[in-house]
Image 1 (cartoon, rainbow, N blue to C red):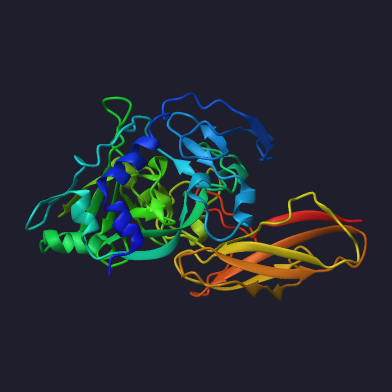
Image 2 (cartoon, rainbow, N blue to C red):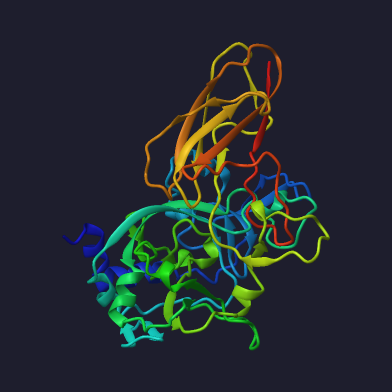
Length: 409
């Protein structure tokens, strides 16, 4: 049965309004409205806030062109699903369409296929629908905490978000085209373009078996609404359990390849050390590098800020979110003494293995003084967060056990 979302999105008028509403002020200057304290080891201690971007509430401004907007961390305490208007934004190139005619939009499927396709949004909406929750996390989320500091967007912990995505399986589309024997990868491309003639087009590829696993999605819905423009309207790839670099926005081209993809964004950019936790030493050479891939487990305390003062002798409710990465959340452990001792936290509702999951714990500071609160996630594959941070020159895949320092008085 066709869902209410699919029915609504199948109406061209609604889709056109969704697109244009998000584009009308897209080119407006993103002036800072105020600042937020976001101390990073290499500075700055404050970041600009802005609400000048269409379809977005107040966000931390990382960069205007191309847009990079970070979710304020207090948003994650609202629940496991990140509101669309507070969902982080990251683009690689500044040439992004400021209008999309959904009537003329086409998704092209070509390459090593039996039948090239040119699909309208109506064609896609008519296909069998799938839906699930999944965390979208930038490869460089938390890069600003790397020491020694590395180049790139100095994100805090807000380059991530969780949504319930609605769309069609990439497998359904590929099966309609007919993947030829010998095909090895599926390349995804969107409507954004380089700002200079020789700039490498942003494209990413998945192994054929991965692309056809039934989970990789072409999404048109996000938390029950059409995708915001800045989050990929009208279609984006959802690659659950993998980093956001593969989640192509404004997806309009799928090419099936019969040889490995060696483009810049696969061979050079977005590569990690082929080591445990993608870790290496600063200055180390000769380390084998591979394309970044699966998410790793993480957990955060969301209702208590570092530096907070609480009442000694009174129970304190602690809550947060966890993600298992490429597997579900098996457990979250909580420590109030800097990791010397741990106790299991209470897990909230399971929204699916790729989703954030809420957790709760109680703590009573028996005496006045300083306390270090920690949360540690272990996923269903048995992979747990490490106690020491990783380091690599790209600032990717941080998932160390986070610490929140508080005082009891």
